[in-house]
Length: 245
Ligand code: G
Ligand code: G
Ligand code: MN
Ligand code: NA
Image 1 (cartoon, rainbow, N blue to C red):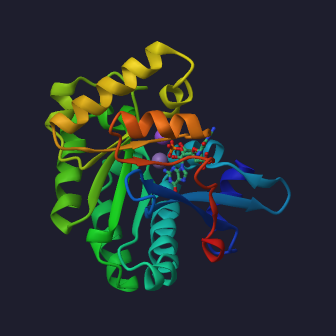
Image 2: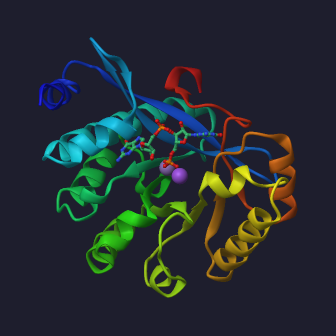
């Protein structure tokens, strides 16, 4: 509970910051997008991962506060890099709770208006499991986000239990292959078979495919051969503060 109280005050105390990780086009080698990843510098416990504090925020109404703050920071901080790379896109993560929150769409609109970053330069990532909690409600929110002009990605794909039929009813643009499959490339034939079929399936329904968690050159080579569109991972670039992008 003390930690929850600390988190409530973190935005106003300037303890939250964003690390940005490049997402690279496998044909051109260019960075087309950066993913914003939230970080919390706690005065006593040091750096706390979102894997720990996002669930805490989701158990209370805090997720709206944190989510809104994150959107405003990200849309402001991307402006500098976009002056040098005008086509650069921003992608941010949403949690399950934000999906059925009526404040989400206004928060995206507001962040865009305040920063001047067009919604078309923004993508929202939702995990497969969050989408499947309530696909009907998720579909409504996603349609409203799309209406604004922002793009949508399904994150950690392959770790949930969604069917292709369910996914096709959602207005998605991008599919991100979970890093557990990418890490097996070149080592397990199963991993290669799975990645091959995910790419084929995604392309069949016109989704752009991102491979996550690329840590080695050989994985990159296999992904290129398999026709994957984009890739992300420590081998291509670690998440860094905006001024180091
Ligand atoms: O960057 P890192 O590996 O620490 O992220 C851990 C998890 O936290 C990942 O699943 C990532 O998607 C999630 N995450 C990172 N930033 C945010 C954020 O701003 N909002 C939400 N909801 N999740 C985030
Ligand atoms: O769930 P999501 O895909 O949003 O999680 C993103 C997280 O994955 C980031 O917090 C980032 O720190 C982590 N990440 C990014 N690239 C790599 C990688 O190459 N290897 C591993 N193990 N983690 C990565
Ligand atoms: Mn993500
Ligand atoms: Na992921």
